[in-house]
Length: 157
Image 1 (cartoon, rainbow, N blue to C red):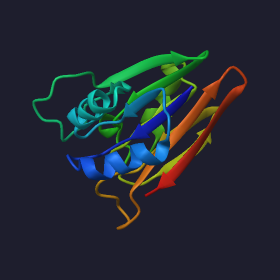
Image 2: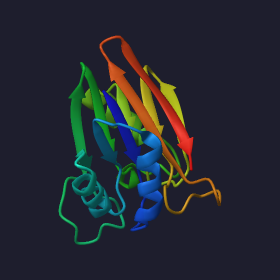
Image 3: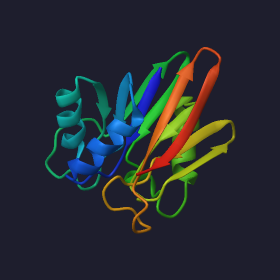
Image 4: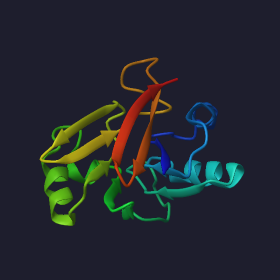
């Protein structure tokens, strides 16, 4: 399964549209919050299945704050990250991932792309597609998951 991953789109759909084009054919779009509605708009427009969560800037938005899904026997945990203090440390998020038995954790909030494997768990932040922490480094990720394993790539526009 080919999964496109976005975060922190903040209503800037033109960057998200460009990222979707660059991703190619995807089976699922994950959005790690801050303007969850952007993911719903993109999913509808492109007829792509979407899983998305709300972030700290999704005031008054309805939707889940976290999602735990299983894809090809891998547990994938999706959250924005603000409730776990990810701008300062991944420690709280790591504890939550272990508690849930997650193999892959996808989060946002920092506006900085990052991937790291800790304790056998992949932590993946696709960065911000709209307002990256490092100007000009708009990014997204593509995750490939199959029975043999998974691979991930962080891409810049």
